[in-house]
Image 1 (cartoon, helix red, strand yellow):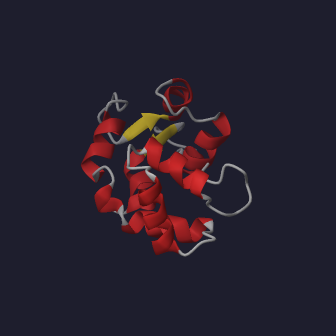
Image 2 (cartoon, helix red, strand yellow):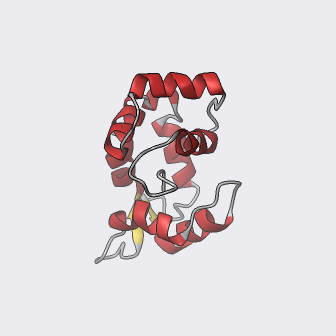
Image 3 (cartoon, rainbow, N blue to C red):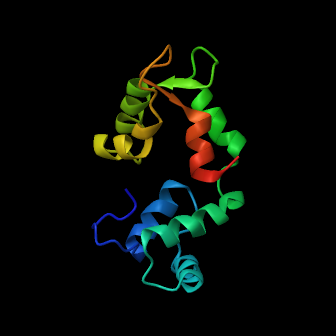
Length: 131
């Protein structure tokens, strides 16, 4: 999803795309600053470590929870995976492919029980940015 050309390196173009989707500064100076802190070439694990360390500069945990709760019809911490996938693939300026949605959220889909086919979004968020 982040490594658009699948070369196992997060390039300036890849970083710019991610920052644009997060509505962050993508000026040349900003990109240069990110890369000066990351010491290129930047592999995916290094990039994720860096991004999660910057989580306070991104949307707050509460803002992200708010986005998920708009899909949480039962107000129980779960959202229907297929509905969420459809929205991520068809809405907004940065649409995700089905493979991207499956890759990012697929492991958080409940396989059994009363919440089968639903995503426990608190588990997802904790895995991505911590609580």
